[in-house]
Length: 157
Image 1: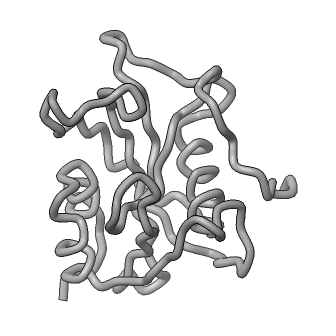
Image 2: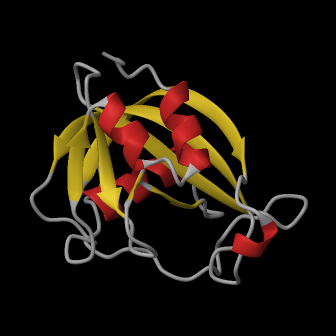
């Protein structure tokens, strides 16, 4: 396996866009081996917790983009288990900005194989393992992320 970069990709020059100009975003629902916990990361754009996700670029598959984002944002190495499908933008038009335009999300369920002590965005983000109930509460203001969590096979009790 190639060495993982300690630099996050930046910019949008290689960003993929859908047929209606929506930004294509790939993300993971990273579960523990026993599926009792999901790893959430601190949002940098606003307070609260999110799932690892980011722009799907032209030189990678959606799965590769999701795993790259999980490494950059959460410092985890994962194995994708399931394609959770596409999730349309759920923000209202007035919530969209130039920095956060309309998006179409493609989420995958993954098992965390390794959690590193150092990762590209460790200075900007913290991470926390949560139960389904804790994660469901933490993602209440992010309906697209909540949808991805609920599509996963995480144990709910």
